[in-house]
Length: 235
Image (cartoon, rainbow, N blue to C red; front, side, top):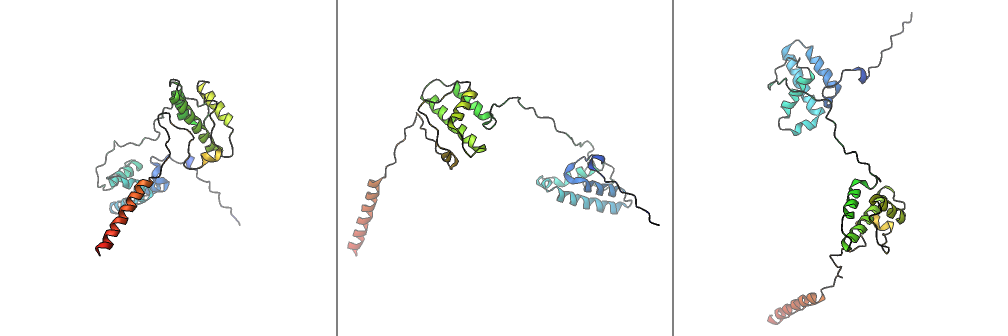
């Protein structure tokens, strides 16, 4: 006569007890529960030390602490609800508690108009608006326009219309920040190259062309030539 075996129901984590410390996993908790059932104290101490070694391997980050062994024993006692009667090498402090849920972080409810630029760019634009009219504000506005296009290309590397950048900067600043009529943004390929070279010059600094110091080079060359001639004449 064929007898069907009863179907074993699967055990889901949602049906199990909540882990007090998730770093070590459920298998370590099962080992601790097994250690509680051992009647022989000497054998129970040996199993407890084995569990400590397993805990140190499962959570190697704990070894970064100076007293990590003490911490492991504290966690062992917490996971066992202080019901594991073993010879602990450290003083057991039952006041140690584990907080399951951290305190919620408070975020500023600030709506970013264009997320691909981020709040930092909005703050820069608002700060640039406060500058008095002049070369410095014009220079800062051009830098912001360059950075807006560069940030846009981070999310869309295909192409971007320069008019779109101007429109979005105008929308963020509320029409209070605009580039000059003769200003032009760089081509897309120029922004994608590293490092990006901005085609703007600070009003407080003037670009000076680099000149080759031929006079200094000729002076050193002549000096070396004379020294060689003296050595050859001395011989």
